[in-house]
Image (cartoon, rainbow, N blue to C red; front, side):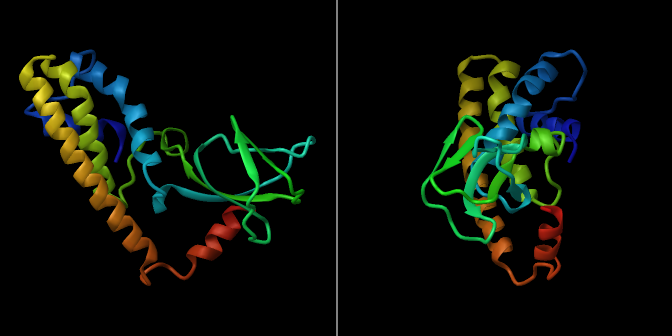
Length: 192
């Protein structure tokens, strides 16, 4: 789902608004869109945003995270052994061991890797994101009066319920036997 479609969907959640350029609604949506998408993607190890990548060491023996790494989830050596003693400082991983490379699992920053598009393959995630975006822009659109604040709070609670459902569904699909047998092979090819 492209950015404009997601923004219009957020407006539809709030009420009967049409997305127009240079309006209060558009300014509020643009201001909150990327940070809300990053927040939502960082909330779980979503299968659609999970990346596995081999990272080569820098000359000083440290490892720099990929530019699209939003949340580092796991650090292993290239043989698949978990490294227990590692540290993350800014975007650099250090370890007491001296592996030839690291195999990291991370959540990608969708605002970079997918140009801010919401994944069509995860409709419950999209519902969570759109509802939270609506909650965050409601005070700017409706004002900070009691009605606007109540609606924003109500939408935030609804977004949380959508988040829990989306996480459960993503984990269930990720563990399902309905996955493509080629997926692991494709992941390996993509990481080389």
